[in-house]
Length: 336
Image (cartoon, rainbow, N blue to C red):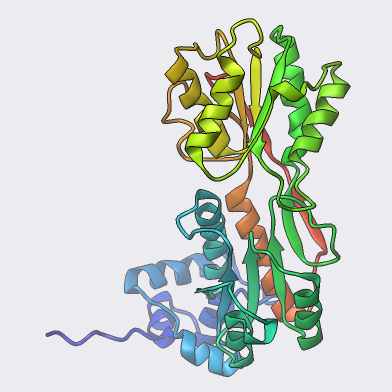
């Protein structure tokens, strides 16, 4: 077996024709040091040619850091929201030579939480909570310990914490306005039962309906749980009566959007000729189903990237931007 050849920053400096200190300034993005563009490019070219990877253990010992950030979630790790956000987190951290440590969010008390043990034992320098339920008491405990952390949430929590969220609910007004422009008379709502106080999807729908002069009808409102079969049956109940059928449905999540499409296919209802559908949220399946599903798309990757930037700032300087709201987009596809 061939022994792996070790490449050092000294080798990079020799290849680029610069000092070892210059290599360090460039690779560590040291501020306040002026580097000519051609010098920076020469170092980056040398790094690529030599396949150089900085020794993070040595760097961490020098800075007295682990060079890792813990990522905690309640979501299944295969969940699209989490994976797309994690992609942004990873890229944001890697740009500053940090790695990701995936941690669990199940614990009896905050003192016993895995992420607290990792932080206390210097295995992570900060924490990003990606769609994770964290209580006010847990926040107080982390603040008392001086732990750098950022929360990524679909909706603003309303708490004075470092948080990245999105304005996607504001686009529901645009969706209802779009339905109105298409001559839609009756609009239904299908979505999950609200489980958190800050889940304003149904409320935002009602506000948008009132704004555009629509009546919210109880018989055209479906609230479902985790059972896909039950959700399909409830949506089909909305659609079976041709005389009372809505012209459009706002599906309050990607899952409800795709189940609405499925229900229409099962009943032989044409989309969008008979019923127009728009989903709230993002999925990599919207372009694969037929017809392709219109949606309010969340900037999941950018949310992760921003969270990485914020937590590194908190680690370096203790500074924290309380709430950053990123813009979403209403994407019109074939279903509307």
